Every structure is written in C-alpha cells, then in structure tokens.
Image (cartoon, rainbow, N blue to C red; front, side, top):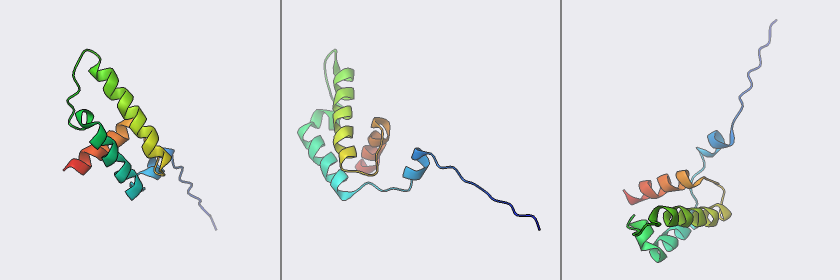
Length: 86
C-alpha cells in the first residue's frame, strides 16, 4: 500500500485572507478618518502631501494592528477603507 501525504504551507498573508476586520478595527478606522478628514477624502495639499499621507496611513496601521488580528500592511488597510466606502 502506498501512502501519500500532502503538506500545505501557509504564508502569513494566505492565513490572513480569511480573517475579517474586527468591529474594534472598523471603529478605530472611522474615528481616525473623522479626525483626519483630509486623508479620508484624499485631499491633502502641499508639497509634502504624499509624505504626510504615508505617515498618517502608517500611524493608522499601527493603531489598527494593535486591535488585531488581523494584522495588515498599509496597502492592505487602504483596500479595506476603499471597500468600506462603497
């Protein structure tokens, strides 16, 4: 008799695809966006607007990940905010 074992390796990212954003994370995101409405509306102005937006998103990501799991990157949290806006 021949036995075959299949081993599936999961990366951190594939495991987190199934994890849903918690209510605490959504609440934190909403509160942060209320206090940073220019970021929420993507209306930062000035020569350093891109850098300020990046810094604000990094700060928000740290706040949201502290409420996790799930733990996401800045880019992943931006996608969550876009989905929530629809």
